[in-house]
Figure 1 (tube, rainbow, N blue to C red):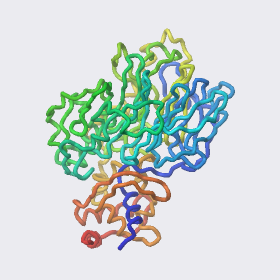
Figure 2: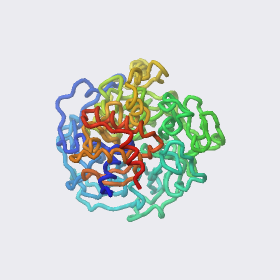
Figure 3: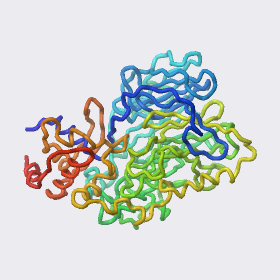
Figure 4: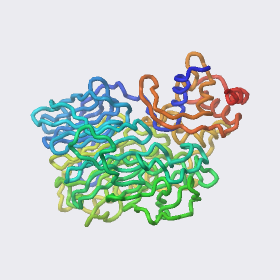
Length: 581
């Protein structure tokens, strides 16, 4: 019998979901050199960007800024020295002069998220806990003891990031993402039906309200405030109307799950990322419904009998106040309350889009910071491109091609905007340097033109298809079932999806055990698990519906591409493993 841990490890590396690559994990923090124009970003009018820090060891998730201007960063990869970083600008030029890591706490994965300064405390979360520590403006690194505010006994699992928001009445709001794509009987297995009366909604797929100061709370201490939300990372409390808002991640893989109903193009452009005004009792409709941004209505999910046309009872659920294109990955939301920017930005919403991973065979999209003007508590006009240029290119074929991926947002005490990104840990500070009274349409016009680029416009069904001319056989199977996550170049997305390029798990390691790769395709995987001493938590569906010949073809393709040079896999070898008991 094969070693179970080894087999599971192999299965994970080939899985197409929620796994990270190791790029820059051990990279040292780097102070910024002299900035190029706007630190490489495209901004409207006379907005100016400077680099706060060029890169951080452990890279970055969310950020927060204290009332004295000190910047705090939640790291993607905590270590024994600490899971957070404190930054201080000592001479007022916007660049960090001091970088210190702190807070050694348990973090079981790289998706811990959420960091806010609230009532003199720094709140932050790991995948399983929410902490706070009292800030002292005289010391950069907090010297008070760490307090455990909330523990999630169900994590780690898929979609377990914990964004944080606070109202004005002593409450903390925490999202509990669902460990599923669409509450299927077999998660992410093509064709598997949805469970009626989805049981996951009792503990997941919503937002819970807690006491902001009570220590050692569990989910049972909270109140389920909203439901029907598969995955939320972008969340903020809007003080202008005293209401909670989120920008939710839509479901994945319509074509992969139901290829007889949805085309590759439909899977790339559906469903929307929904901007939701959340009130107590809100139900957004997951897992039964998704929002179609083209038809502008909620439609029944195929797991529950939908066909891309049926609306069912979708109209009775909470509708988005704005719908964004599919798979853009909204990872932070900030309502701007400062005065440093022109008046039109006051009380409007900034949204950090991390960028898509699963739009293949069409270009990946997103990777920018958006602005939504608000008036009288509602969006006023279309969304705008506020900050762009993070990827370093106009067309992103594979996610790993993106140089930077925006992640966190925070406002400084002077009203400037801070942006963090996940690939290097770079942080920007953006301020306005022009005449605020004269800012208007002329300053926005150039940014509006950027919407014509591949990363923003609706892809053409034929002309935008990057698959044209790709190899047949194993390449075709790879494109259909693997490339949307592992990317065309096999490098993964540099964030959630592992690289196949040069992976010893693809080649079978020092013993060249190709059976291991066969098993991961046939059997799938449910985490959590550790691989190379790094925690992973994901779900890969079984692909045992593929024929022996197709599995052999795709594994042969993978083992002989992306820098790999291994022996072929035969249909007979797949058949032998399939028949194992």
